[in-house]
Image (cartoon, rainbow, N blue to C red; front, side, top):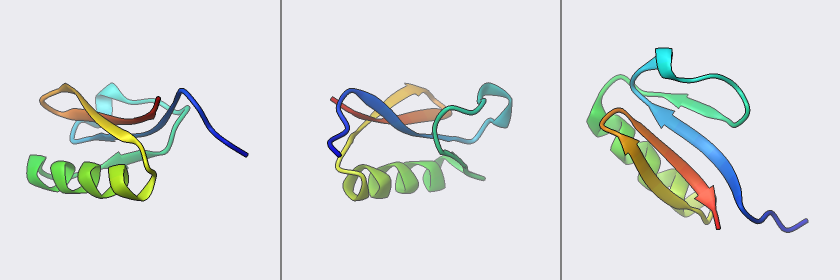
Length: 61
């Protein structure tokens, strides 16, 4: 199965901004959020996008 054009995960420090649909990773600090986003980007073979100061998404284009 080849996934194209999908949100693979959401990484945030603000649990009030998220709801299901993709795997969600809730981090305690911005540093942790940046590290998790970088690791997931490599693991999932996706691209990380910062939507705000407290939220990243990993997408497949």
